[in-house]
Length: 407
View 1 (cartoon, rainbow, N blue to C red):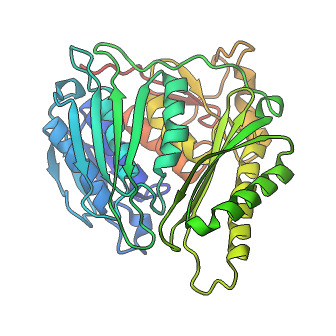
View 2: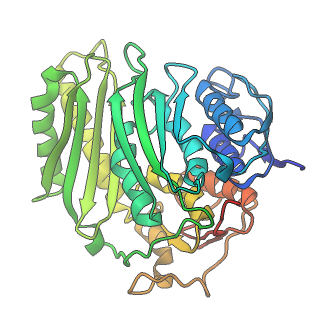
Protein backbone atom coordinates (compact mmCIF):
# COMPACT_ATOMS: atom_id res chain seq x y z
CA UNK A 1 0.00 0.00 0.00
CA UNK A 2 1.62 3.23 -1.16
CA UNK A 3 1.16 5.93 1.48
CA UNK A 4 -0.64 9.18 0.72
CA UNK A 5 1.93 11.97 0.97
CA UNK A 6 1.10 14.99 3.14
CA UNK A 7 3.52 17.90 3.36
CA UNK A 8 3.36 19.05 6.96
CA UNK A 9 4.39 22.62 6.20
CA UNK A 10 1.26 23.21 4.09
CA UNK A 11 -1.17 25.85 5.30
CA UNK A 12 -1.13 26.30 9.06
CA UNK A 13 1.69 23.77 9.16
CA UNK A 14 1.13 22.73 12.76
CA UNK A 15 -0.10 19.83 14.82
CA UNK A 16 -3.69 19.93 13.61
CA UNK A 17 -2.60 18.81 10.15
CA UNK A 18 -0.86 15.78 11.68
CA UNK A 19 -3.85 14.89 13.88
CA UNK A 20 -6.34 14.99 11.01
CA UNK A 21 -4.12 13.04 8.61
CA UNK A 22 -3.42 10.23 11.08
CA UNK A 23 -7.01 10.18 12.36
CA UNK A 24 -8.49 9.78 8.88
CA UNK A 25 -5.88 7.18 7.97
CA UNK A 26 -6.82 5.16 11.06
CA UNK A 27 -10.54 5.41 10.26
CA UNK A 28 -10.28 4.52 6.57
CA UNK A 29 -7.35 2.07 6.61
CA UNK A 30 -5.19 4.13 4.28
CA UNK A 31 -1.45 4.50 4.75
CA UNK A 32 -0.16 8.06 5.08
CA UNK A 33 3.23 9.73 5.33
CA UNK A 34 3.48 13.21 6.84
CA UNK A 35 6.73 15.04 6.14
CA UNK A 36 8.05 18.38 7.40
CA UNK A 37 6.01 17.92 10.57
CA UNK A 38 5.15 21.22 12.24
CA UNK A 39 7.66 22.96 9.99
CA UNK A 40 5.79 26.22 10.50
CA UNK A 41 6.43 25.83 14.23
CA UNK A 42 10.19 25.44 13.79
CA UNK A 43 10.81 28.58 15.85
CA UNK A 44 9.30 26.67 18.78
CA UNK A 45 11.83 24.00 19.79
CA UNK A 46 12.47 23.00 16.19
CA UNK A 47 9.07 21.63 15.19
CA UNK A 48 8.54 17.89 14.71
CA UNK A 49 6.21 15.66 16.72
CA UNK A 50 5.36 16.89 20.20
CA UNK A 51 4.42 14.79 23.20
CA UNK A 52 0.68 14.95 22.55
CA UNK A 53 1.17 13.92 18.89
CA UNK A 54 3.24 10.91 19.92
CA UNK A 55 0.61 9.94 22.51
CA UNK A 56 -2.25 10.17 19.99
CA UNK A 57 -0.44 8.34 17.19
CA UNK A 58 0.70 5.58 19.54
CA UNK A 59 -2.89 5.01 20.66
CA UNK A 60 -4.15 4.84 17.06
CA UNK A 61 -1.24 2.60 16.09
CA UNK A 62 -2.08 0.15 18.87
CA UNK A 63 -5.80 0.35 18.05
CA UNK A 64 -5.25 -0.45 14.36
CA UNK A 65 -2.22 -2.74 14.74
CA UNK A 66 -0.44 -0.24 12.51
CA UNK A 67 3.10 -0.29 11.24
CA UNK A 68 4.62 3.07 12.15
CA UNK A 69 7.92 4.67 11.24
CA UNK A 70 9.24 7.83 12.86
CA UNK A 71 7.13 7.77 16.02
CA UNK A 72 9.25 9.70 18.50
CA UNK A 73 9.40 13.21 19.88
CA UNK A 74 10.75 15.83 17.44
CA UNK A 75 10.45 13.42 14.49
CA UNK A 76 10.01 15.38 11.26
CA UNK A 77 8.48 12.50 9.28
CA UNK A 78 6.03 9.78 10.26
CA UNK A 79 4.54 6.96 8.19
CA UNK A 80 1.39 5.31 9.50
CA UNK A 81 0.08 2.09 7.92
CA UNK A 82 -3.03 0.74 9.70
CA UNK A 83 -3.82 -2.98 9.51
CA UNK A 84 -7.18 -3.20 11.28
CA UNK A 85 -10.42 -1.27 10.89
CA UNK A 86 -12.24 0.54 13.72
CA UNK A 87 -14.78 -2.30 14.02
CA UNK A 88 -11.92 -4.65 14.99
CA UNK A 89 -11.27 -2.57 18.09
CA UNK A 90 -12.57 -4.66 21.00
CA UNK A 91 -11.88 -2.74 24.26
CA UNK A 92 -14.80 -0.82 25.75
CA UNK A 93 -12.76 0.74 28.54
CA UNK A 94 -9.74 2.71 27.35
CA UNK A 95 -7.10 4.80 29.11
CA UNK A 96 -4.76 7.22 27.37
CA UNK A 97 -2.03 8.92 29.39
CA UNK A 98 -0.18 11.81 27.76
CA UNK A 99 3.59 11.51 27.63
CA UNK A 100 4.04 14.90 29.28
CA UNK A 101 2.19 16.91 31.90
CA UNK A 102 2.05 19.83 29.48
CA UNK A 103 0.41 17.74 26.73
CA UNK A 104 -3.22 18.59 26.04
CA UNK A 105 -5.71 15.79 26.67
CA UNK A 106 -8.15 17.59 24.35
CA UNK A 107 -5.74 17.54 21.39
CA UNK A 108 -5.10 13.83 21.94
CA UNK A 109 -8.88 13.38 21.95
CA UNK A 110 -9.19 15.27 18.65
CA UNK A 111 -7.06 12.61 16.97
CA UNK A 112 -8.65 9.62 18.70
CA UNK A 113 -12.32 10.59 18.50
CA UNK A 114 -13.06 9.98 14.78
CA UNK A 115 -11.68 6.44 15.10
CA UNK A 116 -13.63 5.68 18.27
CA UNK A 117 -16.86 7.00 16.75
CA UNK A 118 -16.63 4.18 14.19
CA UNK A 119 -15.40 1.49 16.63
CA UNK A 120 -18.77 -0.19 17.21
CA UNK A 121 -19.11 -3.77 18.39
CA UNK A 122 -21.97 -6.19 17.73
CA UNK A 123 -23.55 -5.48 21.12
CA UNK A 124 -23.66 -1.73 20.50
CA UNK A 125 -21.77 -1.01 23.73
CA UNK A 126 -20.34 2.46 24.39
CA UNK A 127 -16.62 3.10 24.79
CA UNK A 128 -15.52 4.65 28.08
CA UNK A 129 -12.37 6.67 27.48
CA UNK A 130 -10.25 8.12 30.28
CA UNK A 131 -7.66 10.74 29.33
CA UNK A 132 -4.83 12.00 31.51
CA UNK A 133 -3.15 15.26 30.49
CA UNK A 134 -3.81 18.97 30.29
CA UNK A 135 -7.42 20.16 30.41
CA UNK A 136 -6.65 23.89 30.45
CA UNK A 137 -3.53 24.44 28.37
CA UNK A 138 -2.24 27.10 26.03
CA UNK A 139 -2.96 26.74 22.28
CA UNK A 140 -5.56 24.03 22.87
CA UNK A 141 -9.31 23.76 23.43
CA UNK A 142 -10.21 23.50 27.10
CA UNK A 143 -12.30 20.77 28.69
CA UNK A 144 -14.99 23.40 29.22
CA UNK A 145 -15.05 24.37 25.54
CA UNK A 146 -15.30 20.69 24.57
CA UNK A 147 -18.13 20.05 27.03
CA UNK A 148 -20.16 23.16 26.21
CA UNK A 149 -19.58 23.50 22.45
CA UNK A 150 -18.07 20.42 20.78
CA UNK A 151 -20.28 17.81 22.47
CA UNK A 152 -23.56 19.65 21.66
CA UNK A 153 -22.37 20.33 18.10
CA UNK A 154 -21.62 16.66 17.40
CA UNK A 155 -25.07 15.79 18.76
CA UNK A 156 -26.98 18.47 16.87
CA UNK A 157 -25.05 18.35 13.59
CA UNK A 158 -24.34 14.60 13.28
CA UNK A 159 -26.51 12.78 15.81
CA UNK A 160 -23.48 11.58 17.80
CA UNK A 161 -23.85 10.98 21.53
CA UNK A 162 -20.96 11.75 23.87
CA UNK A 163 -21.00 12.18 27.64
CA UNK A 164 -18.06 13.77 29.40
CA UNK A 165 -16.92 14.26 32.97
CA UNK A 166 -14.01 16.06 34.57
CA UNK A 167 -12.27 14.45 37.55
CA UNK A 168 -9.29 16.78 37.89
CA UNK A 169 -8.00 19.82 36.05
CA UNK A 170 -4.59 19.86 34.39
CA UNK A 171 -2.93 23.24 33.84
CA UNK A 172 -0.04 24.40 31.67
CA UNK A 173 0.13 27.70 33.55
CA UNK A 174 1.72 27.96 36.97
CA UNK A 175 2.82 24.60 38.32
CA UNK A 176 2.17 21.98 35.63
CA UNK A 177 -0.43 19.43 36.72
CA UNK A 178 -2.01 16.38 35.13
CA UNK A 179 -5.75 16.46 34.68
CA UNK A 180 -8.13 13.54 34.28
CA UNK A 181 -11.26 13.59 32.13
CA UNK A 182 -13.52 10.87 30.78
CA UNK A 183 -15.69 10.62 27.69
CA UNK A 184 -18.34 7.99 27.05
CA UNK A 185 -18.63 7.55 23.29
CA UNK A 186 -21.58 5.84 21.64
CA UNK A 187 -20.18 4.65 18.29
CA UNK A 188 -22.15 4.64 15.06
CA UNK A 189 -23.79 1.20 14.76
CA UNK A 190 -21.99 -1.30 12.55
CA UNK A 191 -22.87 -0.95 8.90
CA UNK A 192 -24.05 2.64 9.31
CA UNK A 193 -22.56 6.03 8.58
CA UNK A 194 -22.62 9.32 10.44
CA UNK A 195 -25.74 11.17 9.30
CA UNK A 196 -25.80 14.92 8.74
CA UNK A 197 -28.78 16.24 10.67
CA UNK A 198 -31.22 18.56 8.97
CA UNK A 199 -30.94 22.04 10.45
CA UNK A 200 -33.15 25.09 10.06
CA UNK A 201 -32.17 27.96 7.81
CA UNK A 202 -30.32 30.65 9.73
CA UNK A 203 -30.43 34.26 8.59
CA UNK A 204 -28.47 37.20 9.96
CA UNK A 205 -29.36 39.13 12.08
CA UNK A 206 -32.60 37.51 13.28
CA UNK A 207 -31.05 34.08 13.89
CA UNK A 208 -28.08 35.64 15.67
CA UNK A 209 -29.97 37.65 18.26
CA UNK A 210 -28.35 36.65 21.52
CA UNK A 211 -30.64 35.17 24.17
CA UNK A 212 -28.15 34.20 26.87
CA UNK A 213 -24.48 33.80 27.72
CA UNK A 214 -23.05 31.03 29.90
CA UNK A 215 -19.95 32.09 31.82
CA UNK A 216 -17.20 29.83 33.14
CA UNK A 217 -14.65 31.40 35.50
CA UNK A 218 -11.56 29.51 36.68
CA UNK A 219 -9.48 32.09 38.52
CA UNK A 220 -8.09 32.77 42.02
CA UNK A 221 -11.00 32.87 44.45
CA UNK A 222 -10.34 36.46 45.53
CA UNK A 223 -11.19 37.63 41.99
CA UNK A 224 -14.53 35.86 41.54
CA UNK A 225 -16.99 38.51 42.68
CA UNK A 226 -15.27 41.40 40.94
CA UNK A 227 -14.80 39.42 37.73
CA UNK A 228 -18.44 38.31 37.71
CA UNK A 229 -19.60 41.89 38.19
CA UNK A 230 -17.30 43.20 35.47
CA UNK A 231 -18.32 40.51 32.96
CA UNK A 232 -22.00 41.21 33.66
CA UNK A 233 -21.37 44.92 33.11
CA UNK A 234 -19.40 44.44 29.87
CA UNK A 235 -21.88 41.94 28.43
CA UNK A 236 -24.75 44.24 29.36
CA UNK A 237 -23.24 47.04 27.29
CA UNK A 238 -22.62 44.83 24.24
CA UNK A 239 -25.80 42.74 24.50
CA UNK A 240 -28.53 44.63 26.38
CA UNK A 241 -31.21 42.57 28.13
CA UNK A 242 -29.56 39.17 27.71
CA UNK A 243 -29.66 36.48 30.38
CA UNK A 244 -26.27 35.84 32.01
CA UNK A 245 -25.68 32.45 33.63
CA UNK A 246 -22.57 31.90 35.72
CA UNK A 247 -22.37 28.23 34.83
CA UNK A 248 -19.15 27.37 36.62
CA UNK A 249 -16.95 29.35 39.01
CA UNK A 250 -13.91 27.62 40.50
CA UNK A 251 -10.77 28.55 42.38
CA UNK A 252 -7.83 27.99 40.03
CA UNK A 253 -5.50 27.85 43.00
CA UNK A 254 -2.74 30.06 41.60
CA UNK A 255 -2.29 33.64 40.37
CA UNK A 256 -0.80 32.18 37.19
CA UNK A 257 -4.11 30.56 36.23
CA UNK A 258 -6.89 32.75 34.84
CA UNK A 259 -9.37 31.11 32.47
CA UNK A 260 -12.69 32.57 31.28
CA UNK A 261 -15.11 31.02 28.75
CA UNK A 262 -18.19 32.74 27.34
CA UNK A 263 -20.74 30.70 25.39
CA UNK A 264 -23.41 32.70 23.61
CA UNK A 265 -26.78 31.14 22.75
CA UNK A 266 -29.21 32.58 20.21
CA UNK A 267 -32.97 32.07 20.27
CA UNK A 268 -32.59 29.99 17.09
CA UNK A 269 -30.17 27.59 18.77
CA UNK A 270 -26.84 28.87 17.46
CA UNK A 271 -23.82 28.76 19.80
CA UNK A 272 -20.52 30.60 19.81
CA UNK A 273 -17.66 30.38 22.26
CA UNK A 274 -14.78 32.67 23.12
CA UNK A 275 -12.30 32.12 25.90
CA UNK A 276 -9.09 33.45 27.38
CA UNK A 277 -6.25 31.82 29.31
CA UNK A 278 -3.86 34.18 31.06
CA UNK A 279 -1.36 34.46 33.85
CA UNK A 280 -1.40 37.46 36.16
CA UNK A 281 1.69 39.47 35.13
CA UNK A 282 4.25 39.75 37.91
CA UNK A 283 4.51 43.44 37.14
CA UNK A 284 0.74 43.98 37.37
CA UNK A 285 0.13 47.08 39.46
CA UNK A 286 -3.57 46.52 40.02
CA UNK A 287 -5.70 43.38 40.23
CA UNK A 288 -8.74 45.49 39.39
CA UNK A 289 -7.13 46.67 36.16
CA UNK A 290 -6.21 43.12 35.17
CA UNK A 291 -9.78 41.96 35.88
CA UNK A 292 -11.16 44.79 33.75
CA UNK A 293 -8.81 43.95 30.87
CA UNK A 294 -9.59 40.23 31.05
CA UNK A 295 -13.34 40.83 30.96
CA UNK A 296 -13.19 43.47 28.25
CA UNK A 297 -11.11 41.32 25.89
CA UNK A 298 -13.16 38.15 26.10
CA UNK A 299 -16.52 39.98 25.91
CA UNK A 300 -15.37 41.99 22.90
CA UNK A 301 -14.15 38.82 21.15
CA UNK A 302 -17.53 37.15 21.63
CA UNK A 303 -19.28 40.23 20.23
CA UNK A 304 -16.98 40.34 17.19
CA UNK A 305 -17.48 36.61 16.59
CA UNK A 306 -21.26 36.92 16.52
CA UNK A 307 -21.10 40.00 14.28
CA UNK A 308 -19.45 37.91 11.56
CA UNK A 309 -22.78 36.16 11.11
CA UNK A 310 -21.30 32.67 11.34
CA UNK A 311 -23.29 29.61 12.36
CA UNK A 312 -20.33 28.42 14.46
CA UNK A 313 -17.30 30.12 15.96
CA UNK A 314 -13.79 30.12 14.54
CA UNK A 315 -12.56 27.15 16.56
CA UNK A 316 -15.63 24.94 16.22
CA UNK A 317 -15.64 25.35 12.44
CA UNK A 318 -12.29 23.64 11.91
CA UNK A 319 -13.08 20.87 14.43
CA UNK A 320 -16.21 19.87 12.49
CA UNK A 321 -14.56 19.48 9.06
CA UNK A 322 -13.28 15.94 9.65
CA UNK A 323 -16.79 14.77 10.58
CA UNK A 324 -18.39 16.67 7.69
CA UNK A 325 -16.14 14.91 5.20
CA UNK A 326 -16.85 11.44 6.66
CA UNK A 327 -20.61 11.92 7.08
CA UNK A 328 -23.50 11.02 4.82
CA UNK A 329 -25.24 14.04 3.34
CA UNK A 330 -24.67 17.76 3.04
CA UNK A 331 -23.69 20.03 5.91
CA UNK A 332 -23.04 23.73 6.17
CA UNK A 333 -21.36 25.60 9.04
CA UNK A 334 -20.33 28.91 7.45
CA UNK A 335 -18.09 31.36 9.26
CA UNK A 336 -16.37 33.84 6.97
CA UNK A 337 -14.26 36.94 7.33
CA UNK A 338 -17.31 39.20 6.92
CA UNK A 339 -21.10 39.04 6.78
CA UNK A 340 -20.94 38.87 2.98
CA UNK A 341 -18.39 36.07 3.04
CA UNK A 342 -20.42 34.06 5.54
CA UNK A 343 -23.64 34.49 3.55
CA UNK A 344 -22.37 33.03 0.26
CA UNK A 345 -24.02 29.69 0.99
CA UNK A 346 -27.48 31.14 1.76
CA UNK A 347 -28.83 30.87 -1.84
CA UNK A 348 -28.33 27.10 -1.66
CA UNK A 349 -30.24 26.56 1.59
CA UNK A 350 -34.02 26.31 1.38
CA UNK A 351 -36.46 27.75 3.89
CA UNK A 352 -36.82 24.29 5.45
CA UNK A 353 -33.04 23.93 5.79
CA UNK A 354 -32.60 21.60 2.80
CA UNK A 355 -29.27 22.15 1.00
CA UNK A 356 -29.14 21.99 -2.81
CA UNK A 357 -25.72 22.27 -4.47
CA UNK A 358 -26.86 21.81 -8.08
CA UNK A 359 -25.74 25.32 -9.02
CA UNK A 360 -23.10 25.79 -6.32
CA UNK A 361 -19.45 26.25 -7.19
CA UNK A 362 -17.33 23.19 -6.45
CA UNK A 363 -13.98 24.13 -4.94
CA UNK A 364 -10.59 22.97 -6.13
CA UNK A 365 -8.69 21.22 -3.36
CA UNK A 366 -5.06 21.34 -4.49
CA UNK A 367 -4.12 23.66 -1.63
CA UNK A 368 -5.70 24.94 1.60
CA UNK A 369 -8.93 26.67 0.65
CA UNK A 370 -12.20 28.19 1.73
CA UNK A 371 -13.46 30.56 4.36
CA UNK A 372 -12.51 30.74 8.01
CA UNK A 373 -9.16 30.48 9.75
CA UNK A 374 -5.95 29.05 8.34
CA UNK A 375 -6.67 26.00 10.50
CA UNK A 376 -10.06 25.55 8.79
CA UNK A 377 -8.60 25.96 5.30
CA UNK A 378 -5.84 23.47 6.06
CA UNK A 379 -8.28 20.98 7.60
CA UNK A 380 -10.33 20.99 4.38
CA UNK A 381 -7.22 20.35 2.31
CA UNK A 382 -6.05 17.43 4.48
CA UNK A 383 -9.55 15.93 4.46
CA UNK A 384 -9.69 16.19 0.66
CA UNK A 385 -6.30 14.45 0.34
CA UNK A 386 -7.39 11.50 2.50
CA UNK A 387 -11.03 11.51 1.32
CA UNK A 388 -10.93 12.61 -2.35
CA UNK A 389 -14.61 11.76 -2.86
CA UNK A 390 -15.66 14.42 -0.36
CA UNK A 391 -16.92 17.53 -2.15
CA UNK A 392 -16.60 21.12 -0.99
CA UNK A 393 -18.72 23.98 -2.33
CA UNK A 394 -18.85 27.78 -2.02
CA UNK A 395 -15.55 28.35 -0.22
CA UNK A 396 -16.00 25.14 1.73
CA UNK A 397 -19.07 26.48 3.51
CA UNK A 398 -21.00 23.44 2.22
CA UNK A 399 -19.57 19.91 2.39
CA UNK A 400 -20.86 16.69 0.88
CA UNK A 401 -19.39 13.81 2.86
CA UNK A 402 -18.43 10.37 1.60
CA UNK A 403 -20.93 8.45 3.78
CA UNK A 404 -18.11 6.36 5.21
CA UNK A 405 -19.04 2.98 6.69
CA UNK A 406 -16.42 1.04 8.67
CA UNK A 407 -16.01 -2.49 7.33
